[in-house]
Image (cartoon, rainbow, N blue to C red; front, side, top):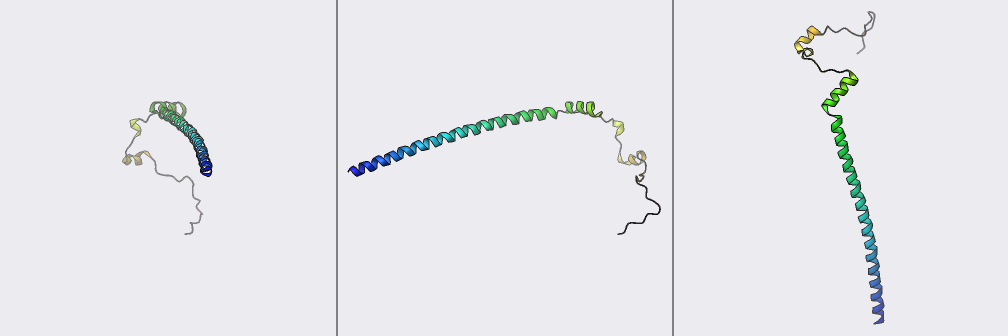
Length: 109
């Protein structure tokens, strides 16, 4: 009888200790989960900020102003647009940029 009592007390003590260990492990995991959720929220806020900045930076009116101020670009006029059939009239015949000497040998094939 005495042996059963000692064995019961030992088993009960082991179970209580394992429950305490499990409790502290769960608390540690909960703290880690809270940190991860906080990090996710911060990343979401950063993404929203970056999307707002992207929208501002790609605003057509802003880009037009930047192009005219910094690059000197102006909108194209309708007179500048021509059809393909008129290209020969407007663009002169091609002239080679690098003149070939008269005594040059033909490339070997």
